[in-house]
Image 1 (cartoon, rainbow, N blue to C red):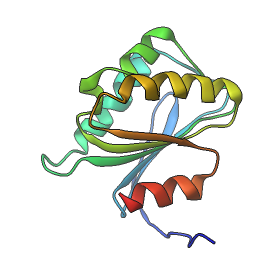
Image 2 (spheres, rainbow, N blue to C red):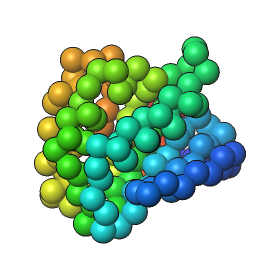
Image 3 (tube, helix red, strand yellow):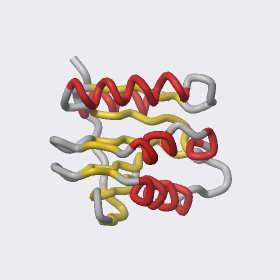
Length: 135
């Protein structure tokens, strides 16, 4: 049995595609909206938000929860595989909700294997949180 972790939200931010929370345990949580199409600019804006939370020393733990019927443009997907996008991230956990999301995440994970960031996908939020906090 997994022990449930508790956390407090210390900052909240909303943009066109997601609600973002900064938690007191060091995780930045991106909850993607349902029925959206992620464009390059959306991915770049999320990267800029993450970059603004980097203190110059500690890389961040990132938790992404996909929305139902969320899709991503090829430009945004390509942007997500660039090494410079992951320089502020220690690890990313992605909660997938569909086979389509799983296929896209497999594609992204395969491209990030050569980079120093750890990335895994989960179908359970608590398991994803536990994994991030175990690193």
